[in-house]
Image (cartoon, rainbow, N blue to C red):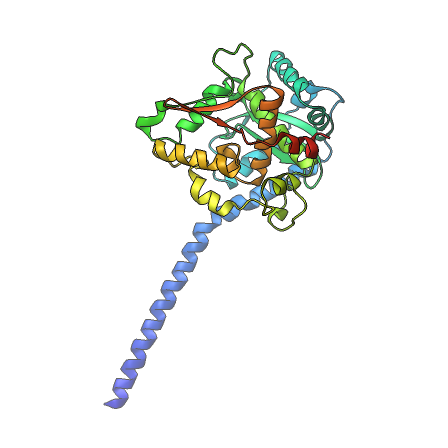
Length: 338
């Protein structure tokens, strides 16, 4: 009888063990199947990136020719960009190239002529291509070619059809709850200002600022995470922030809704946190995204405020809040433009 009970006990143990092992095995198979598409997307992205970067190292352009920046439609870039957007889970449809009109190039040329000589030198010496594309969710994006000091910019064709005031207003209203959206309006220049500026010019100033920040060593390489590790390398941020770096952990917790398209907040929450961000030293809500965007926004609104004499204002109900009003022009002058 005792022997029978022991056999029955071990039989139960065996089936319990076998059942658990089977469940575990099935779960592992499920995870593998579930992650397989992700591994496939990652593999394709890395492959496309290597192919594109290998070809990009051979790129050249005509000296002092803005037109030449826009006159290249390498298909390998589209393949690289599509695979990157798939990897980021932001790909929606096949991407297309667009050729812009000569009038648009002339307008961009006029804007570049107003920029400091440092910007003009970087555009001439370090920028190899400006691709105009459609079916993307970004307005502009800068790509560094490996570890070199050569860059490529991709622009959304939609930026040529939009005004900065309308675009900035909509970007803020997107954050606000539906029944409160119309209580927010933003201005990069007054409605009455005859010196109209297209959105693409604003976006390009921001992207050019990424290049200047990189070349002037004010922010880390796009391909590096050294920002948090090495003090004494980013003087612009170190002088603005006594601890020597920007701690984005609490910023992301408090301000994540500024850059998260899936979230909306009450207008009072938006207004309160906008003021707190400005008090903490962030020039704009977008600058809370990461350290690269922080440096780019400082330089972008140095250009808008000091060079182009444009103020960035957000109007909430009857109150006007001036953004980017905490920029240390003397510090930027000493670190970037001298």
